[in-house]
Length: 166
Length: 109
Image (cartoon, rainbow over all chains, first blue to last red; front, top):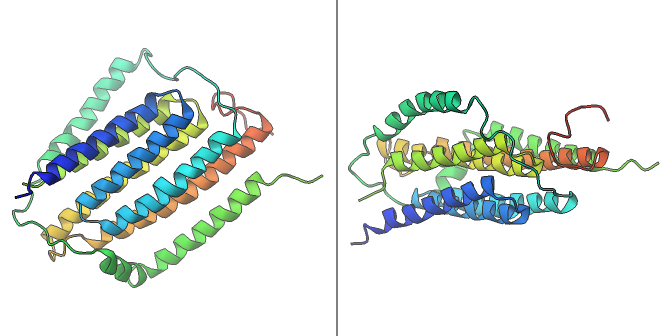
């Protein structure tokens, strides 16, 4: 009865992702860009919900919409922003590059739309318990390596921005 | 009526392209960092979409866990990348007060 809801929400989220993503690339107002990036991430969380990945959507909201957007906004605050022209528009190689991009993209598009979806709809349920089980049994070692990487990034970031007291 | 896999992949490809174009075209280091995040997120969408398809084809549990685990690791990498990237931008800014990558073209301090 509510079969039309998934395509409807998909269209809304896709519009939000592509529109806000294009605005991030094209706009010149840095704070608006950062907030539109957060909006893109929020729409992406909706996409994850549509795909049945509730836990991933939660992580998306926590890490991307929360942490990364705030970090980027801090970066905006600490630096002086200035208007500058785009880098690479309308160069001589543009037609050649367009042709090459089309040649590369065409097989990808054909492949992407040649997938046949199975007829049976997937059973929906929480994906938290299978994800946690998988992460802490099969992928326990990569998980530990990832935590070491985060620690190294934390220490590295502190060392990089620390002022020399002289 | 469900949304086909190709539609998710198409959205992912468009967002990845937008991010790549932003990295190539913009000159503000903070904006470049934002565009890299967009590209990482686009790859996450493709991973989750294919994970759902693998789950449908496999045991029928909805979502293949390998894809989800990979997405979690991409989250970790993205968080580490943005932290270190902003630290590098701030360190370079202290040397020379600009965030324009055309003006930061030499490694000399």
